[in-house]
Length: 288
Image (cartoon, rainbow, N blue to C red; front, side, top):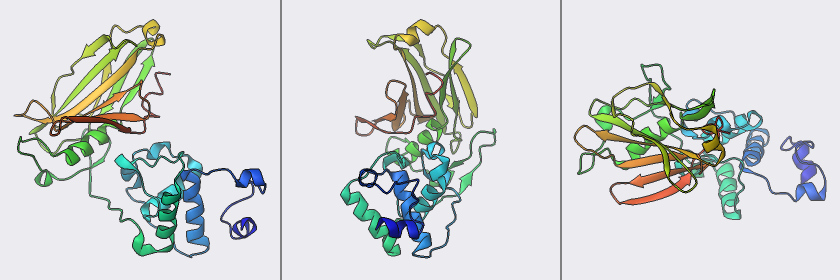
């Protein structure tokens, strides 16, 4: 089977050595995508598919290694190997036997593949990142006049992916490019915190509510020392979108440098909260 895979260009010997030890090692989701797409192209004879908008659909797209990017793009857009909760591809993780069965079925049977939709693109006129967003007429609200959770989550996650926390010249900063909200009825409500290992706040700034399109903002975390950071102080950035007439958003999300790879979500409608996977590899790098 290994010799056949090499002959057909599914694997290369430098990728997986022809030894019992090497062939018995688990592979990750990046390698799965590479094998699946090579089978798809070299044996099934399918052509490449358009990858327009793939960077909008994969939340951790920027962290995909260049070596695997083509295969991840094709496997994702063909609906064979899509993301996890929150749009995270999570390529360095493995898979269960059940997940492997699903992947094989989707690869073999086109009718079983996931449908990947790319919505229309809305450009942020302030020069910030372009985002995929529902139009103002498509925005749905709940009985409290808040944007429904799924749509609010879209806008907040789009913004959270732009966050950078970093140190420069002995000072600490948070940079954010805010997604353009659909109309002046909505506003951003960010919050900034630094706290020590006991949970005591060293710094707190409830940044002003901002109406509509705000572009990129940089906040300085004043009064925080290198010694405090070295002692384990953590930085937290929270965000929700609100309506003019409602003091709370339908969902609040939080990035915390002590919880790498996770995002905190607090839901107003159910009064529930959870930590879920979220790619933070590019967010906290400047604090290390």
